[in-house]
Length: 203
Image (tube, rainbow, N blue to C red):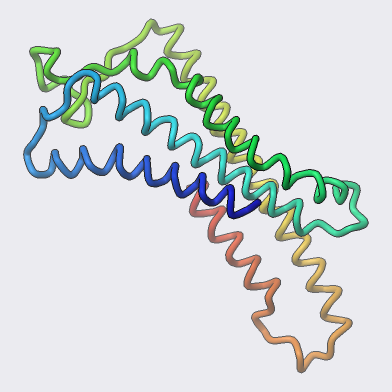
């Protein structure tokens, strides 16, 4: 199941890099007005969807990992058997929801060839038009809420894993003799990886 989520994260990250990286590279070579109106709408739409799929899939991966390492006596232990079969549908649902959730993005973007004042083009290759203030504020609030919810879940699940690994290390320390426990135990390594990843991702 985690491999399935990682495939979605890889696909989403690749789309983010392609939809943002290729146009920015072309601008650096001086090709500012290379996109038509439809190209601008498509690139911005794909970039926004892929970015949010990456965030939600990373959050889903963190939740799955937290469920995987919880002890069998926990009240959440029964989720271990159920969660794997829902991973595929959840990943697919992320794409569908975010495809429809970003439907306003193409309406806000226009190709630079459609306007006379090229200095108004955002990023040098597309022009962003403003929506009605109420619509724009509502749209921004909804997407900010989704981002904050995903980041909150990511921090919560990562903190849960760190706490569980710490308590597990304390238990193991008394079972094994001190000569078999290295200073950098597997629990410590996993904790460091979790903290580095979650801090980098949140920042």
